[in-house]
Length: 347
Length: 268
Ligand SMILES: Nc1ncnc2c1ncn2[C@@H]1O[C@H](COP(=O)(O)OP(=O)(O)OP(=O)(O)O)[C@@H](O)[C@H]1O
Ligand SMILES: [Mg+2]
Image (cartoon, rainbow over all chains, first blue to last red; front, side):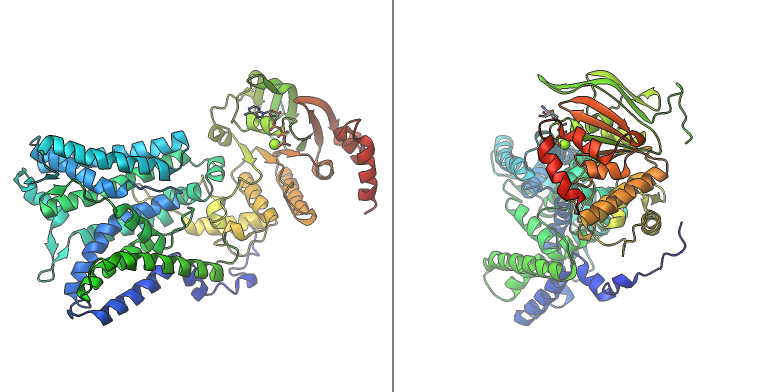
């Protein structure tokens, strides 16, 4: 080893701490979150948005969005989309609900089977994508519509209605509800989903930035062929990401099933784009190979603040969608400007 | 060069009468060549000559239909490119060697990430990776500014150099370079050729694929000429001049036009 390697190179004088921070993919989302928070604090008519009561509300929306958005972000960094992530919430909630109510399987085994089932759907998504070579956009769009049809069809067939109800009659419901749908910290009533969200964000961030698998995620999304040529198991990495995405949707499905004690057949439809928005607002490139898990969580927090903030401002919640559209556009614009300014020749 | 094998064959690689077909297309027919450790072996050929097909056999992508492929005297029988990689054959494909959005150190260790700790807490040894990457590149004569820099911000030559240094670091016995200079300017080509010699000095058997006889002549110890799927000529460094090499590669028909071009080149 050479002894003459200077600790810092005179040519990197520009890489000050400030530039390093500005280079982080989630920096745009973080600044956006602060702006959105200040904005909704200002227009709040109830006086509770700023406090813990308000936080308990918007973190709940953020958590149920963020749990899946973080997985979607990792998948997107890995170069793929999952448009079936929203409908999977409904599918897995219905799957667990039907096992409990129609087949009298206790709640905990039903939950375990639901995760196995979701893993299989993710495996199928991933396997179809890597085997057919078709864009994941198309493959998972097909999965989206198939599951949407199955959700309605099977639910009607088995229950003669479009919902699965009376899940709380299942054996072990109370303990499962404590784990997945309890409220914490009275009197504010934070949802336990927030804990799941934070823990999963931390784990996803660690996996992405600090492990071998994380390195592979960046590589398969950045350049699939280069990754394959250096010996990265490209297909396995992608399939694992699809499985993680489906399973995270299943977690949210189970959370809402236990929380509401029932499940609508149409649940989750439309959410897939909210997850993608959260990931993109959080700094993920649509073309793959770049982004962060924390960013997707901050993106989810923005979405949570927007949904709750608009209601607290006394506006019609229909405006939330307009707000999401604007946020998406502004965030992507900001990210690309910051990128150009601080990444140098980043492609 | 120390070289363990069981048949007394000193070649790192040996192809004997290898034929490769794609349906009715015969991409390679009866090709024989060998590559010695610590030398640079150039494979020259025009478009469609079969160079890429040859590389894909060497790197484990294709299995030849006929003929034998020996690695240090033993049957290669690669099941996959990963298999070839594990047995010391590293291939640097022209544009497909590094991931532009990833940092230099992440690229350097891609597929061979150093880790610490035990499952489920096994994690990248980032500190080691960064310093090792920087010093390894420095030893190859590549002075990168910052291992956290994205590879996409490096020049084309530097990018090739990172891929070459990586292959050498991970103990490649055979390093295959697929037209590493074809997209580069004169100066950048020179940079890459320098790293080719560095790798050779470390005892690596380098296979350098190119259609540029000038570049080949600068670094090559042995030259194989591939034309329409056949190995038409073989030269040792001592027995050939640059002009002969260019002439042989161009073939009879285009010779006049090329001689003309050559004149303008050598007058530079
Ligand atoms: N997968 C394939 N299927 C059918 N024919 C093929 C296939 N791969 C190569 N060939 C044929 O084999 C011949 C040699 O191709 P190859 O790609 O090895 O040439 P090359 O020397 O690398 O050319 P270039 O300099 O243009 O890259 C060509 O005629 C090509 O059409
Ligand atoms: Mg070729």
